[in-house]
Image 1 (cartoon, rainbow, N blue to C red):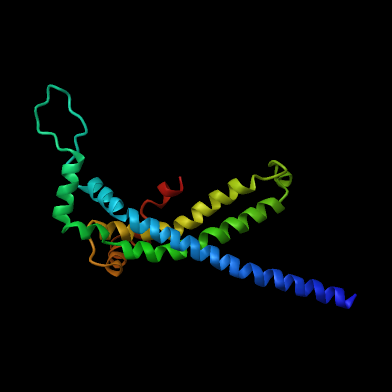
Image 2 (cartoon, one colour; image 1 turned 30 degrees about the vertical axis):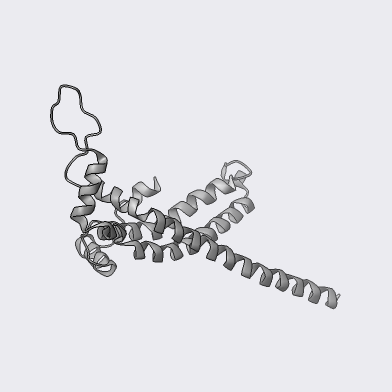
Length: 194
């Protein structure tokens, strides 16, 4: 009996030790994929942010009786790039986004797994809910809320850098905190979670 108990303990340790490298490799792969995606699409994100905050409206179409000069989105994009300091300015704030990938990834999967496991273990009938709680749906909502707690401040800093409102991430954080306190870093959090 003792050897069986030792064997089960050893088997559990072997499974746990085999799972650890798999979890780490999945995390590393997820972070690497997210870095590649962000690096490739970041100039478009910066351009979008600058166009959204530019003071001049984009006329997508005009009625035939309006004779005002129409400005295409491409022309306005060129102007935003030129006024922002050239094509390299489209990468302002990228390092903040890349650094932010790691904590977001560290929050994402553990939250999903924990809430999913908990929802499957809870008998919803005790509280007048369906007997089997929709584990994946609950886990997705909880994961979204938890991840946004990390993602939103990073996004606020990113936007301040993209718009040229701050020269670096530390200044963006200090300015947001000085002007609005913690709410400054979490501007838009409610809309993100909605």
